[in-house]
Each structure stands twice: as structure tokens, then as C-alpha cells.
Image 1 (tube, rainbow, N blue to C red):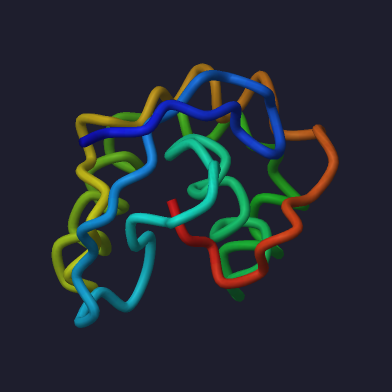
Image 2 (cartoon, helix red, strand yellow):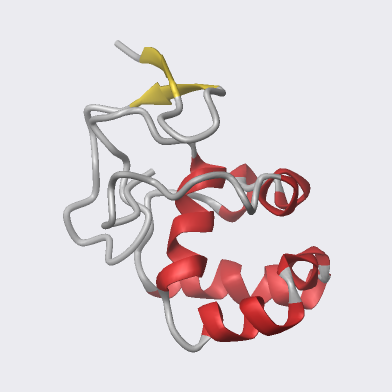
Length: 108
């Protein structure tokens, strides 16, 4: 059964999944409420050299389709539970400056 909770960062309703891929190296399903957009933001803000590039250029570069395709490849290579088509890049950019997540491992 899926449980709906509010994201701990942006307060958007999101589902919590009891199933997670323990092989996932990034963006695993979480047992707490963190939406995929906020999990992506936490990952990008803490993973170098991405964090430095985004700090210099601004998060708007994430709206570029080539950047999104590269991130989709990163998700696939990292066996992520999150799917690229779940990410709303406009929301990621719009909410970029919200406070940081309390879950540093970037679970989604």
C-alpha cells in the first residue's frame, strides 16, 4: 500500500515506497517523505563538480534538454529508483533556493 506524505522540503504531497533497490547508488525510494524533485536538487547541490557548475551558471542550465538527457544517463548508470520522466525540471529550478533537505543521502 502506498502512503502519501508531505515532502519534508517543499511540502508537496508525495508517495513513500516500502520497496527500494538496495543497489541504487543515488535517488533510492525513501521511507520518509522527500519528493523526487527535492531529492534531485539535494543530489545536484552536493555532488561535485555539478554543484560548482550550478553555483556558477545557475540552476536554469538544468532546463536544457541535453543536460536532462545526461542526468537520465546518470540515473540509469546509478541504478536509481527514480526515473528521469518523474523529474519536473521547471519545479527543480523554481524551488532551487528552498532550504536544504535534512536527509543528506538524497533518498527520494
